[in-house]
Length: 127
Image (cartoon, rainbow, N blue to C red; front, side, top):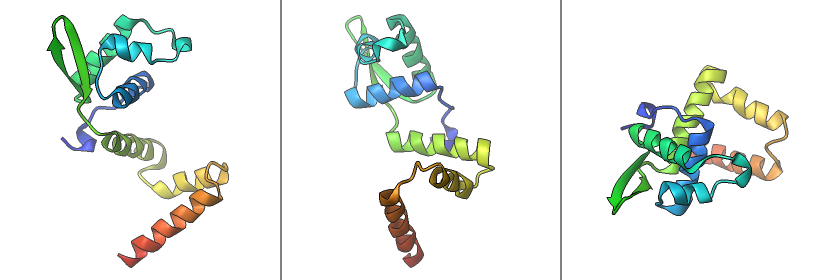
């Protein structure tokens, strides 16, 4: 399954998936315990999100006794690629340049970032 074939993620699903990546595996209870307390999400809601993430292909699970242990089924880079691709298509017609320009103009890219971008562009031109 390519990044394009993955279903889109909601913000809460992305947050749960990030926690699962950091844990490497965990039960719904363990994931819930790592959520910020101000989120006020019930453990059952986390279990539902994990089930949906499984249905979407983002996580897999195994059963240990009565517990479902969830594991990431995709790497963060793949999800990042999908999410950025969705953002580019939705707001920028698939063109990355306006996004980079917006980030630079809104000062979300600092001098160090610009140097890294310049080095990357230089390397791309060579290859």
